[in-house]
Length: 103
Image (cartoon, rainbow, N blue to C red):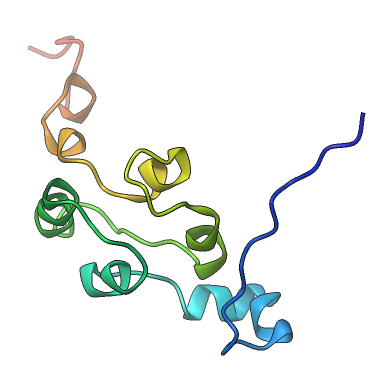
């Protein structure tokens, strides 16, 4: 069975050699709220998670990966890229001793 994958849309202003270069992809990564706002229409929840999460997490994605996401907020790839306020809630795994073995 042959698989068919959707081709990522390359912006016209970017050369093919840059688009296919991992080094360029890393240098041109989307890293800030303003970078993501240039590519996506963010929901108020996403915007708030960016502002709160930027102190805790390093948020970054390549232009190629961002081009795979559809603009709708429920797109699975977009959900993976965007910070979520639920990630900021303290959980057992963030404790120094989550199992309570040290007294």
